[in-house]
Length: 452
Image 1 (spheres, rainbow, N blue to C red):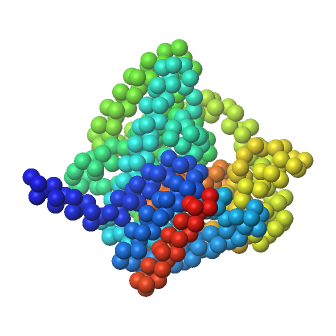
Image 2: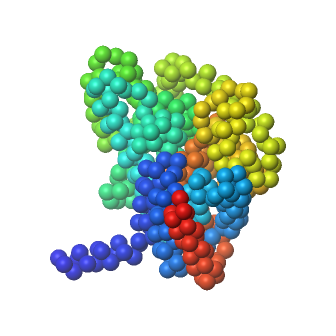
Image 3: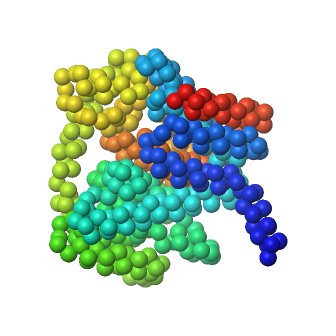
């Protein structure tokens, strides 16, 4: 018994970098847009682990732009406010470390990291649904913000989680508790997504689905792609429809106890999800009928949240305001967190938010065009690699053209873990350089922690 336990502990310790990355995802989700001391402590631990790792293949055409973004961001921060620690560029320093550590994982470990990312998204979704249910019971139910404390950020986090699950889900031949759980997470993620009523996240989901369908066209032709797309939309319509019904019941009726029945129905659906999929495969006409019902679900979502159009127009006005500051300092920008101050003083509407709801524009305004060019290089390189989860990346990109999900560290880390493939097109780095990289970043994080 004792020997068996010792072997299990040894087996777990052999994969300690994988465990640290999983814990990093959890911690970065909880801190939201970031907390410099917390992220710095996490960064120190990750760097110490990285020093003792064998270097793996890494794509320097993504790593170098990451480093350029950080250097330019630090220069912009120092020039605007006299320090480099009180800004989001300090917390973003953890992303190259995470990327490098991903490169040190074995193929099987990378698969487990992606599985854990999906399981974590499922936990966040379940936590949010329970939270919504409790609020419905006391009459305070509203749009689901969950662990992200913001409905729009929660929405895109779940979208990213869903696409990651779809890209890396285990096949039916794989046995075990985790594969069985992963094959049943889809309805949980989509139902929780519906409770956020995040129109931007719904649009991102639709764009990602379109990219996924385009991939199927190249893979198997129009007819098979249309059939697979119909199945995908049928599943989404069922789960999102259930979420919309749950929201309406908990928010707009005097019978919130009915939400309990809907939650129990969701649990049953999860257990029977594979049987439902087999039903869709057997009766090929049924998904098309459900797709028609999906349009009704979309109309219901719009009807439940009629203010979405006004919000979108306000964001367009915010973007117009931001464009006016692009030329204020094209090289280093106006500095992190400075757009809000400028907006407060100018003659335009004061939007009372820290970030322009268009991330490329926000980076161009606050950090300058060099930082924006670095981000564009990362995007282009990722798209050119045509990775397994390009649909999830497309959804994330679309959302960042009208919201701020890039600044929520858990969401961006989820994208990194499910979209990033550092070994693809990568080179084997020198071991000494790898150790120097992690040692340098460890010192940077120590500085951030001590000075902040």
